Length: 381
Image 1 (cartoon, rainbow, N blue to C red):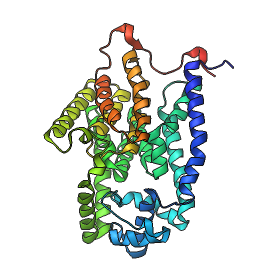
Image 2: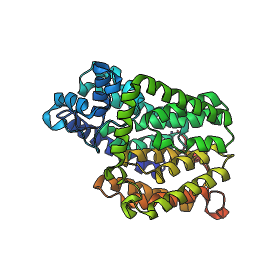
Image 3: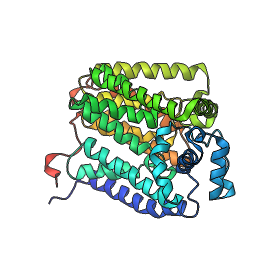
Image 4: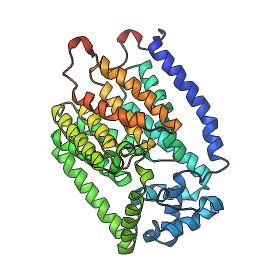
């Protein structure tokens, strides 16, 4: 067994140390106050639906009432902190309400980590030791850590997005469309451009199955919620969208809700579509561009949503890249860690340039091209 090269050993050790320190930090955050996270919202939304009927799962008063069980300071439901996901997320969490909140949260965390591991198994670049570096680095980077601390379903979303890519790449159109439809049923904004990717890459059947799955879920949501529940849901979505806190990790932090923000988003969408079309024969790059475009041009993006960029990096590194892009990815890792200090600006500035670099793949001089994957054959374990 050969020793791994330093370029892999160093990030492996750094990521491992970060994760070792994160475990007690995570427990220290959850144990004294298991309700101080986003999972509590999914938990009480499920409780409200089970107790009073699913038409009440978005009712702020009911959510506040149930939250009082976790302490008076947990009862506040605001436009920055309420349940606004589609019903599917609460339905997925509903079985966990049989457990007290703290063990339910630990189990939910385990499910999310398992989902990321499944996605890693399917999509990670490299071979041997390099793949383990990718896994530990992906777990240790701040957006992933933050998503776990908040109890977000983003890692499950990553697994569904990767599953869609994996199925589509192998001609399994039905499964690809259904998986993407389920992703839309959990958190549509983070994968909003993947149907465009499927269509432009020629996966028409997968696109049709995505549309059918999404429509079926929408109809199911409407039937289960009823007119009053749907009305409450739409009002809650509008209420949440009015809160500027939900756009602090977007270009709005630079330009505000101005025409410049709208122009930026339109330009990013155009670059995304052009990039996907250019690389439509390469599903790795096409899906990576679609994920980066959705996050970069998204009007509602928070720190934990940036885990989708980690998945995009996996897919992008499965193909030959350039030294320029590798350096830019390294800068992106630093920018992502900087989010933990409360400064979103470097990451917001970094994203559109990476989108452009992805779209330009294949145009670099050969002297700057780096082969696909991360590890030469001589370093395999």
